[in-house]
Image 1 (cartoon, helix red, strand yellow):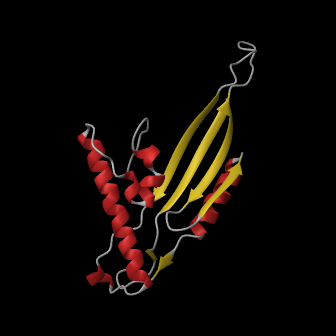
Image 2: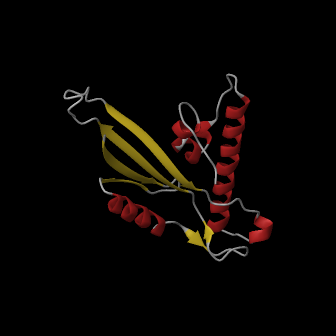
Image 3: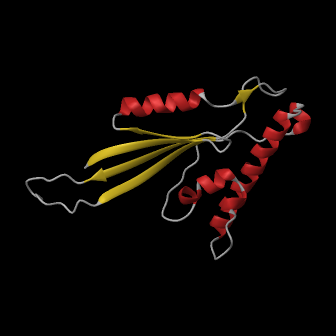
Amino acid sequence: LSPVCLGSLRRAASINAEYMGTKPQELLRILKNGLGRKQVAKTKMNDNSSRSHTIFRLRVESIERPTAENPNPDQAVRISTINLVDLAGSERVSKTDAQGARLREGGSINKSLLTLGKVIKKLSEGGHYHIPYRDSKLTHILEAALGGNSKSTLA
């Protein structure tokens, strides 16, 4: 298989950029660029508090090459997606003394984390419940990774 990689950086807050790369060095450069754009600010609890979630989406497309054993492969494109997600932590206004823009950011962070928890809970219950993916940008972006034919892990 010959992989062609598409690194996609999406942030639920505002940045949505896609870059194409075919070599590991290019993908590392894209990842470093995205991490450099991560929003951080000082709060009472943390000097470098994440003010947004960060998602690095790696999409790998591969097509089977002809070989001696199989000179005419079917040329079907196989696609896999890996999402590396850095979630901003939840915040308590009483502990952070957040005001203005920081207060609104904290509210958005908390809302998306609450929605993520609801989505995971509904998925784990099974059955035919409504899954509220569209209640936050984070869960909407990660819908395919959270449900369906996917595997997820938390670290």
